[in-house]
Length: 630
Image 1 (cartoon, rainbow, N blue to C red):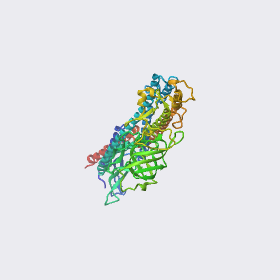
Image 2 (tube, rainbow, N blue to C red):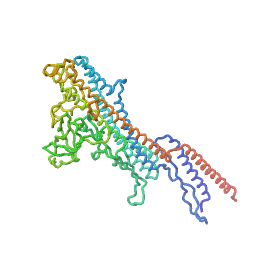
Image 3 (spheres, rainbow, N blue to C red):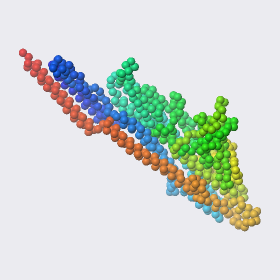
Image 4 (cartoon, rainbow, N blue to C red):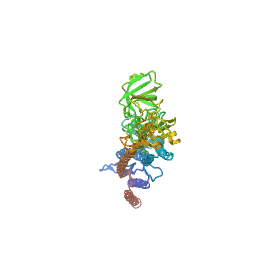
């Protein structure tokens, strides 16, 4: 039979339980604006019944608060993390595409004029040479406008390379953030288990950990697993602790109390000819294995940064190895590059043949030249360095090779390579015309556009009379390989002496000098037949994507606009999905002020009723003790 005063025990349990519920509600209200906070609830169950020697058998013993836990749905957490990686990817990509777009804006009213404006001025000045080819001032105007054109490309290249450097720096910063987050999560895992082993719930620490995973999911795709730790002696008994793991890009970075870090290593060699020095590749610190940023499962801000920094539209060198001669290996099958204008690999670097990396220094390429002077690359030969004596290069015949990695994205290398392709094409056709002419003094003209590289000004060799095959060794020749958008320049001899620029062909000059008796031309030093030919390069002669020079900016701007629009559209779509998922999350785990207000009233009423029970029981005991005694 229960004690006479058992009713006070029951009433007291109600007071205690609803006091805990009110305190939990107060905590929810206090954290209604706290980022990452999850709504908490006080869980109550009926206390264990008391067995009594009565007909009814047992008597209820009140209420017990068993725990204070979070309201959280792991399903919506997973959906949020999956979508967050896509939001981070397109948000970061859009940020950089907006910057690239501003570089190609052409507005003659702005301080920095664009390509079309500069090109038109150059050809207008070239037109002014008609009938005035001997005027040094007009020659200076044209050469100055040609320098403006080269300055446009070198300036734009410098801006893109600066942006590539910014991407590279941000990669290092964001990797540091990933490492710091992994360390914090591992520490929180230990703290949470220490508290929950004693039967409690580390709600605030769990919120902190979940918020870290939220932030991490925007950088890289994350997968989270939490499983109970069982007693090794009693497999059916859980200890109260949990084993929490976080995986990124398919590999564990947090495993319980341990975590791994990623390190940035500067590349020893460039991957693209126009790359800046010191670009980072990522490796796992503990194993030294490469952290793959280009696989299909990769997503998030980190992937966007690598695509913007390294994206080459899969136009890097690749081919099949077909011959070996000592340490020289030749590729003449399945070549990804067949145009001299598209050469984008560095003169020294790493070539991967059949999944084996080899260091090469220098290469040559063989071209076939048709009657119109068009060149087609038919083979490449790379000179390998320090090949391990245990390796038989003949075993690699028939294997595919690649320099760098083909990244299906229009990143900074792509835009730099496209500009270089245009510059090479334009300079080649312009120079070939100039090579048919003579200057005001009757001297043979040399190339007007040159490569102003770190190794000095290169005049660019070009034999337009040769038909058939020719081999260019890039280390020992001045081929157009050395000309890029970053070093595009006008020859110093023309800048210093405008009379060196040719406006008349050798044939016309011979006629004027009387060396060809069939002609009767009296133009003298103002002859401009070559200048007229050069003007066809503005729009008539096809040189870049089967378009004239004037259409270059249109092609580039189309690429930028399409890529930017794609990033903008997907960014909006995934942001909208994120808002929807967040709304679903908050409907379960968020603190609703109206709901908390109702809980306050409900728990207050329950607390007041428990208090009223104490008062009633007090009056009963008073009557029993004071009034019933004899």
